[in-house]
Length: 115
Image (tube, rainbow, N blue to C red; front, side, top):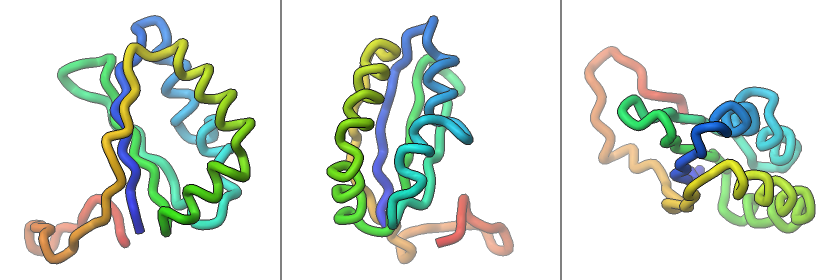
């Protein structure tokens, strides 16, 4: 599995729209929810900078993500245009793969999510 990480700084007046898009039942989930290999989106809100978010999309493979972007290119482009108006900056941080052998967790405590 891979995780695609975005950093977004929202315009103050648009935080609600951004949270609706990426939250449960939002446009982002509806767009990719039907795509093979899409496992969900996590929306993280910075505790020190209330306008800053991290969005993490979980996919089985990068090829499935790329195919979904091609299959839904028109809808994705419309959503991207909306997001431009709601954000001051939006940067794709990168695509990451969990390194279980480099992950440390206290004994008896589960991780963030199962793989």
